Each structure stands twice: as structure tokens, then as C-alpha cells.
Image (cartoon, rainbow, N blue to C red; front, side, top):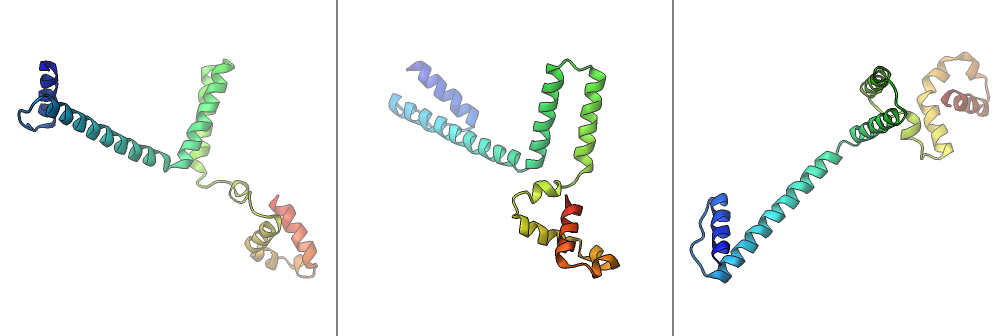
Amino acid sequence: AIYLQAYYWALCSIMGERLGDWGLIETLYNIIVVLLGMLLNSCIIGSIASLLGSLDDRAARQKAKLDAINAFMQRNRVKPDLWEEVREYYRYIFTSIKTESEDEVFSDLSPSLRVKLDLSIRKEFIQRCRIFLKCPTECVVKIVKIISS
């Protein structure tokens, strides 16, 4: 009982408040409530930190790729200078490319919708070329498919 009172006193001192002198049951109840409160606060703070960490999905994918590259280099005993050169190359690629490639972004589009999108994107180019003016629509669509792939 004296250790329980000492623990309760230390807990209240850390929190900066003194809840008074009570019996053994009240002290035990207060310790449980305080510990549950601390556990709940730590869960909330951990969830918020996890949420903020997962917001940047692109950075997570880049980190995963660099981790895989590092594991490959280590497993295959690549020389450190070549290892660093490869890592610097990927860091450069990650910083120079601002968005994902078209293929990754639109990979789930149906083929017909993808062709419509490609025609819309290349409409100005098609209209400027006199060759395409007399071509049938099917021919232009096939050319756009070739250009897009």
C-alpha cells in the first residue's frame, strides 16, 4: 500500500497536480484513470503522426524504391562509389520528375477512353498538319495510338 501511495504521489507530481489524500481504493482508481488517460493520449498522438506520415504517398513510394535499391546493392556487394552514383541518379530522377508518367496515371482507363483523351491532347498538332486533314478518322486514330505508345 505504501508503494501504491508513492507511485500515486509521483504520478500526480509529474502531472503537476495533487488530487488529495485518499484511501487505497481511491488511489488505485485514480492511478488507473490517469494511466488510461495517458494511453488514450498516446494513441491519439500516434494516430495523428501516422496520418501525417502517410499523406505524402509519393515520398513513401520513392523511399520504398530507394530502400529496395539499397537492399539490392548490399545483397550483390556493389562497390560503394557505384552504389552512391546509382542512388544519386534516382534522387535526381525523383526531384526532376514532378508527376507520375501518363501510363501510370491513366493505366486503368478503358482503351476507347484513352484514345479519346489522346486525340484531345494532340488535337492542335493534328489540326496543324495538313497530312491529317485529308486522312480518314480511323487513320488519324491509329496514328495517335502509335504516337501515344
